[in-house]
Image 1 (cartoon, one colour):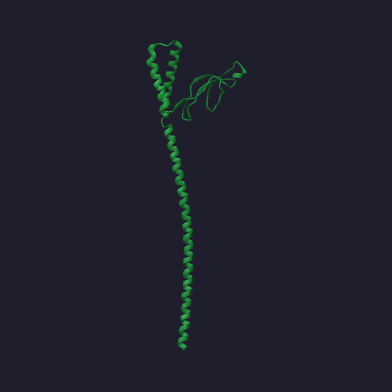
Image 2 (image 1 turned 90 degrees about the vertical axis):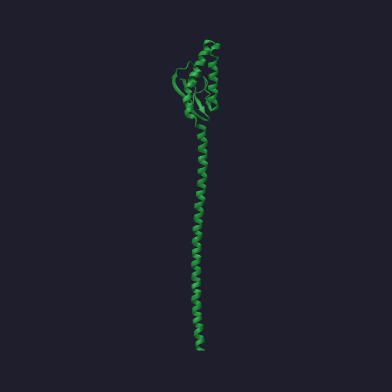
Length: 179
């Protein structure tokens, strides 16, 4: 019987060790599970931030690409503006000297050239004599004495027409302002 008691106390001690090991193992597993959940949460946060950053990148590049298409022809159009100015001067000269049928071809070429530039987005800036001078959209070449107080700060003459490509001004109108 003494052997049986010894076995049961050994069994109890062994069972206690097994339970203790099992509890330690469960505590260790729970700790590892908590660490894994924490790591998973951090990785999810990194993923969401990276995804949001990528979405912002796509939107930004799309916007830049659209802007590039709008202004891609800007350099070409800028180089054509002096030619358009020369055409305008010649056309005004013809109008002042009286019309002749000899220049119908010239006027046809002028109209085609003007329409081609307009179809590519080139628009003449609306500036009229007597408008209020605005430094944001006009370039003042000089100031002259105004004949009356009503002409002060107003556009007296337009030296060069300004042009826009879409909403962007690519050449400011050059004007003379009354002082």
